[in-house]
Length: 169
Image 1 (cartoon, rainbow, N blue to C red):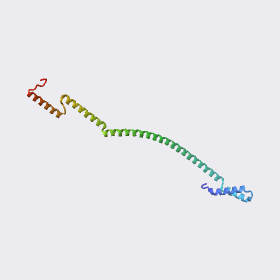
Image 2: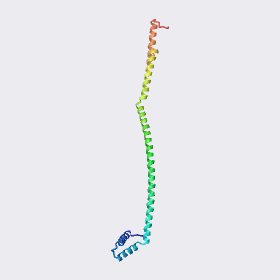
Image 3: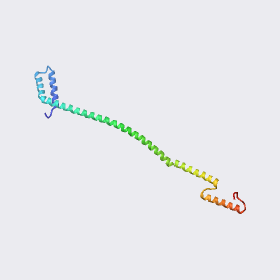
Image 4: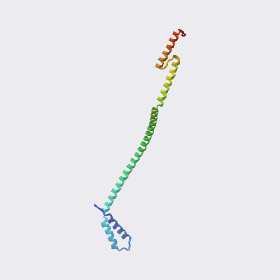
């Protein structure tokens, strides 16, 4: 059977049903309706319809299996997605911390706060040392030191030339 006329079988089946249920219907009409039904609905057609139904059920079953497989795969992918999102959030938080620390360090370096403090401490130490040296040994910066020494030597020479003795001579 290549083609089954479903609409024709439906119409004949409805007429046959009415014929079987209507006792007032003339006998000939009932027999004609049953014969017409049997003519259009033969065992070959019944087997073809059953085969088609079985194929449809198998197709439905295979589609159900495919859908189930897809649902399982989607479930696994959702779990993987959640794990990936979790890892991504952890990495994002870590790198945000690293970036914040780096930004803070860059800001410190750019502001030169530590370098500036170190330079200021060195300057204070040099000034303190110069004051100590100046107070103790009459030494200062190189040029000033030489000038102070020259003045001190000239004062001693002037004192010596005037006949004033310096203690220790």
